[in-house]
Length: 265
Image 1 (cartoon, rainbow, N blue to C red):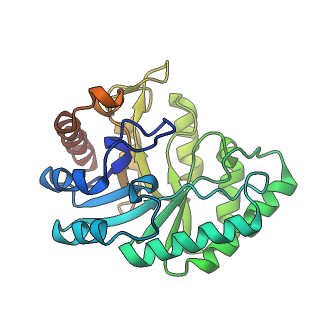
Image 2: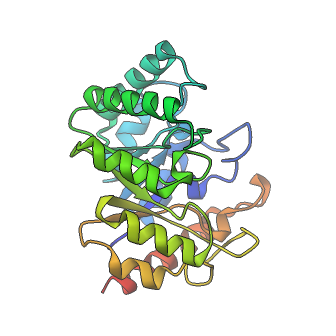
């Protein structure tokens, strides 16, 4: 397993209203120089424009493959109208075609309660529409907390019953607790297509992959050899914008990638 790099890992403004602190084209040369040629792209890094010739040309000239579009489309019927959803999906479809993304990551109903059966049924209908709209693109449902993934059995059942070859799970621990993360893994293992790599201390602060509550040394060997992974958050990237050091973050990302490659042997 040779991890991709998620551009969100190099974005200290990710959780602020600003979302981005620098243009994507300004950091792509450093990403390529650090040896990361397959990347997952934080959707706000693509700017408000549906397509950017400057970004696409940079991908090509630097031999960077934009593998996964990390999208924030919300299939929650309480948060997004059908008309708004259709418009957003059209933008996603155009971006996939323009930049060459092979997969799209979405949250499984951000803000949804797994116990809300009627809303869950609407989510499934919307997911089916998304599959039909994005033919040829793999759709990864990230097991992120604050969504239908809060109940690992619910999100697993949705993917199983959908019987859609293009839909799978993107595993990240829904809760940062060792035993719960391992139980979730065992339940979802047949449906996991991709993994987001991060680790946290018991207080939820981000730490190195080898040091936190998630035992990646026990998880990585269990994964199918076709499962891929992305370095999502690294400690050096978690800081105020004015303190962010791109070179230091990339050095840490290289070290973390080497650790995962070693576990994969």
